[in-house]
Length: 257
Image (cartoon, rainbow, N blue to C red):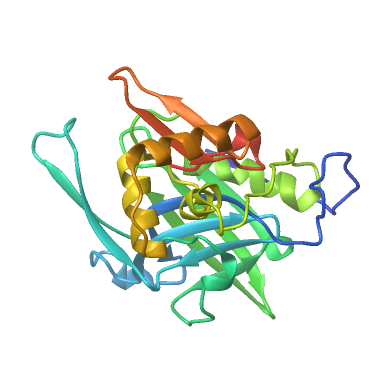
C-alpha cells in the first residue's frame, strides 16, 4: 500500500504534443466503484453504494463510466469453483461518447487530494481516491476484477495520478490513427478502448460498428500496419495467437487490461 502526498504542479520536460487536448491514457474494464461516504452501519450489507463499470484515465481527469454497459461472461479456469465471471463494463472509444449522466463520475486530476494503491495480496487490487468537489471532500474505492498475469494493475494508478498532478508523468507520443474512411482507421477506432483483442474479436467489432463485411486476413494486415506505425502494440502468445492493443501515451506505465 502506498499513500501519496500531493504537491503543487511544476514544469516537466515530458509532455504530450498538445497538453491542452484531453486524451485517453488508459482504461480498466469491469471495475467496481464504492463510495467512501457510505454510513458505517450500512457497510456490512453487500453491494451497498456499489456500481460496476469502466475506469478511464485521461491526462486531465479520472472518469468512472457505468452508462451504456455491456455484459460478458469470461472463463475463470484458474478458479474451479467459479468457472465463469459475469462482468459489466462500458466500451469507451471516444471521450465525447461519455454522457454527462449522474451515474458517471468525473474527477479532475488537480482536485485529487490523495490516492492509495492496494496491491491485493489475497484480495483484488484496489485504488482509493479522495478529491475535493466544490467545498466538500469526496472519496471512492475502485476494485479491479480482471487480474490474470499482469505487470501492473489498478493499484499502480496511484503513482501515475501523482505524476500527472505534479507534471512529472512521462508521456510518449503515439501516432494519430488514420481516418475511419480506411480499414486501418476503423480497426484503430474499435481498439481505442485500450483493451487487448484478437483478430476475430476485432473483426466482429469492426463489422458491427461500421456495418461492413471484412475478412480476417484484411484485419490482420491492417493491425500489422498499425503496429509497424506505432499506433498499436502487438502481443503474440504461446499458442500462436496474436493480440493487439492501442498504444498508450503512458508507455511502460500503462495498466490497461
